[in-house]
Image 1 (cartoon, rainbow, N blue to C red):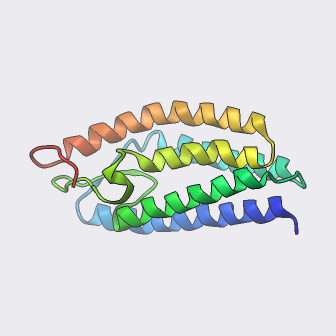
Image 2 (image 1 turned 90 degrees about the horizontal axis):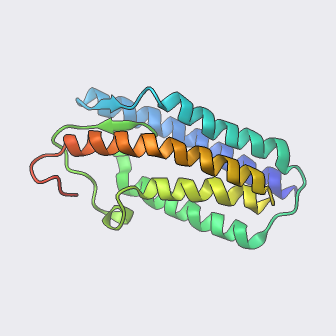
Image 3 (image 1 turned 45 degrees about the vertical axis):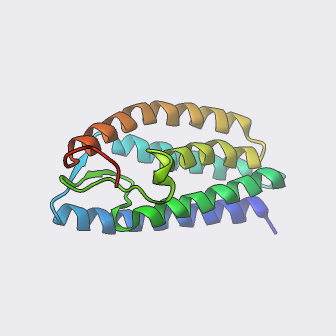
Length: 170
């Protein structure tokens, strides 16, 4: 079996599936009175993530797979699923603020304000390392960090401004 192909096919299908979930949830939230914030940086974020996948597809080929790092990536997939399940119909790849609705405070959101970004940051670094592609891990980790400075700031401003009363987490 060509393990790099299988792994990258899984991740690609997963990401495409998540974009479908995003479209459905975003449309439903906007129809219910929510609004998008940070739409200006969204295309750059999507392009960066797509370039990460393209770089992996272009370079992983028949490279050996580090089983320990692949197992770590598997754990990250479990955490990704936990994040999605915790947010349920409120999960999107965009920043969607719903005025007056408390923030989610279940699942990993009991422990961290942005668990999805922790998972994504780890994935961007770990998956290339599974194939020994240190330069891809380093490059896209730096690009992602720059993106998150903008994104987390925009998200915090939008979400906390939309909260009722005490700005607590639900």
